[in-house]
Amino acid sequence: MPPLCESDMQVSRPRAALRAVARAALMVAPALSLVPSIAAAQSSLDPVIVVGTREAQPLSKSVADVVLIDADTLRNSGAGSVGDVLRRYAGVQLTSTGGPGQNTGYFLRGANTSATVVMIDGVRVGSATLGQASLESMSLSNIERIEVLRGPASGLYGADAVGGVIQIVTKKGQGPLNLNAGVAVGDYSSRLGDIAVSGAQAGFDYAASLSRETSDGMTAIRGDRGSPSYNPDRDGFARTVASARLGFTPAEGHRIGISATQSRLNAQYDSYEFGPPADPSGDYRNRLKTREAAIDYRGTLSPIWTTTLQYARSTDDSISGLADAPRFKTTRDQATWQNALRLAPDQQLVLAYERLEEKADGVLTDTLKRTNNAYIAGYSGQFGPAALEANLRRDDNSSYGDNTTGSIGGSYALSPTLKLRALTGKTFRAPTFNDTDFPFYGHHDIRPEKGRSMELGLNWRSGASSASATIYRNKVKDLIIYNPDPALCPPTDDFAFGCAANVGRATLKGATLTGAHRMGNWNVAANVDFLDAKDDITGSRLVRRAAHQESVSVDYDTGVWSAGATLTDIGKRPDVGATLGGYALLDLRASWRFLPQWRLEAKVLNAVDRDVEPVFGYQGLGRQAWVGVRYDMKGF
Image 1: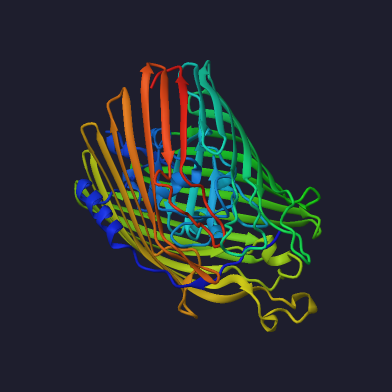
Image 2: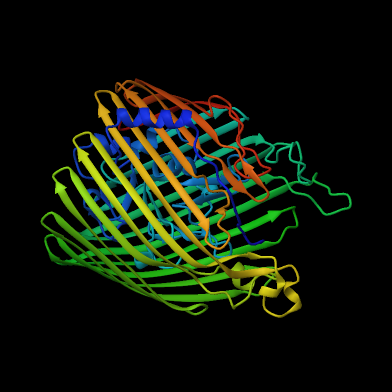
């Protein structure tokens, strides 16, 4: 599997017209919100998150910059993928080698894709060779909520949490039996169907879902860039995702659970066989199978002590290329013992031990293994208007040695509606198996990337209106990048064309402004992100990062019918040898509840048919209309 490499170029400034759109939206939403979720602004209850401290806490008390994308937001967003949801509501920048089903990268606060931790139900997922999770293999149908911790979090989650953490929580059974199902059809011969059952009875809770999506798509490679990979055939995909969760509560405060998720993705893409001449006519496919399975116990042992035990395995099994392409499989076994000690009503100490075993098998290398033992301590406390959070983590890795990271932050309520917060911490990114062992690229002289970060935020919330503004700065050294100069590689003939190297320093800084407001049947949410991600040595901007990205969502809901629109604007981005043009996507959605349990749904993605080039030489889909029907036994 080839390594992923990145370089740096110049990014342009935002366009005046879309600045005006963002300003207009922010006038409707009186400021910038702590929760860019429309549904959260509607709720009178303070939603609970886990990602900020590894234990449940009210979102309003979090010192970190956390975004909650809840079930109502997911259900009503009309988004086409997990990546689209993250871009709209959490300000995550995306890259993709084509349309839906193609390889997707993600930049959280400008950090590399491999520098953001992705978890499903507390289980770290993704390829240990590439160092990233496959968003393109995930389905929205089995997701209950998404929590995004924006900003460095190595003190809690260890290696790679430089940009932050994306925690995906699947649906859990509760209440009486419920059946939910839907079907939809769309342009490009697209089809989507899903079904789910859930409930709880006699101490058992259960939830299971199955979804299937197919599309003929369009050619992923643009025909106007002179790429030898260009093939005018359609590059479609098929994705099947199944998940199940089962729990048993033998006594109040004690639950034993098992969960499993499997995804199969078969996506066509364009490439070519070396000539001469180059031949792009082959049937190239990315056949990816991912699995996550876990067993856990959570129990309240005393009024002050809650313990959690979890053992989990995640696998990433990939065959990418022609029919005889090589296979790469990585496995992560994760064991966690976590204890939450309630020192006082508003003070908590979290102590945890975590062991991670990683293994990679492939035809190009021998089986690779490494283990990591981590010891974690976290404290959170409220002292009247003030709050304090501190975390410390020690990682002992068999391949790259010991690392100690941590963070400390605090907040102060200036008034019942206004809170000031600050946070600083250390991070590191571990080398992937590609960086250490991929033939003619990796070597064991590679060191982990290390960083220091700080941020300052202001949060405001009053009734159905909320707002926040955050500025941040993250200094990273020993960047792991592809270096083409053999002189900077170990002295061997294996690296005639360069190698992985620690040759860079970077500064990731920016500002995030978000806002949400509800007025009668109207809901408005807005996100504005400014990013300055530079290589400190060359002074150039890191590739594929836009200097700005904005998203504005407006929805009108009467309870029987609803209509909404989202405008997402992405600025110009540098890429290798080119500058990618900025673009704005307008997505429209509507629904009609014609019976209490039945809803007709329609959406149009990229409604104005904008030309999208997510990566140089590749293209996204044009306008795509969908129409479908959904049934929910409990009613909408």
